[in-house]
Length: 404
Image (cartoon, rainbow, N blue to C red; front, side):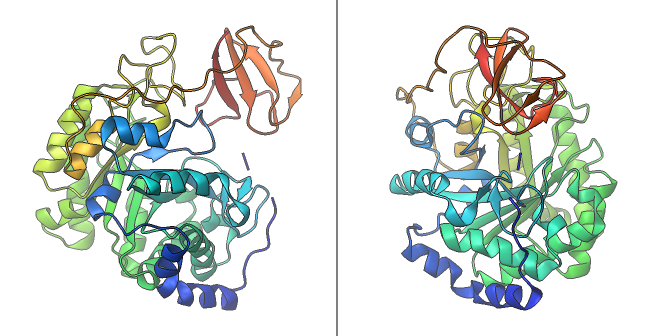
């Protein structure tokens, strides 16, 4: 993934951050809608607008009643620097593609949150010099898109970097202070015990800085989980961690707790079905939790042909489903009722051609856009790569273009 940009100096960063008090108003003048209720931002599923065969957001809204989307991911530029980019390669400053997606969503009465970080890649907290300059970089995103919500997805490898996490938490606090009403979520890895050592260190950093977001959400998948019971157990344990860390009672902790799941087959082969989502949704609502979301809408459709859970894909769930089944649980969490009849969604474009491309070679160098075949699937390179097996990792350099 992932252009070198100069990092803003601390003085300039503080100036931009201070200007953030008018960012939401200024953003509204350039196309933002009136903010949705916080419940919608809390229910927004993740959507990659530039990768993983992006689905039509408008079609999802028509089919499910969904109003909010969590757009992913804002990263540091490839090679370093302190300017925000989409996926490390597309500068936010010159973006028109994501802006078009946002405009489509807002024209239909919806809105978006933007997620920063995610698994892999270089984060702005790692490349910016301090919390103020990190906040200034994120303020550019808030101002450009007129955001009412933002998500800090703090996980590997960044959350193992103490200085980077200090920058990210400090930036989140600055943004929260300078953008009144901004909905801020913090997402991190989940374990059977709630969250691991690095997740707990992140919470302690937030406590030391006096920062309280709308919620801290865990991702109970990719850690040996086995269906909804193991996930709700992790959420119960995480609640106890929040209580002990911040001195909250149980109800206050649940009011600042969130769930971020993975629909269908996870990276490690766990399977989470529609019934699992319903069970976790019931747990979240009955405990008055603040957030219920999942990764991702790009995956919220059945694979073609169906593969019965045989592989993890960035573009389908690998479980039997109708398109956008999982999005409907987010709609329910927001307090709305999904349509009883599903309008025919805009069909996902079929990649041209069905023949297999030239076979992948471990010794060849591939650059963005190169196509190969491997495992009876065609694959397209997202960036420069060599000796990285197509499909070996969901977040790897290869985009699955389907069977051939």
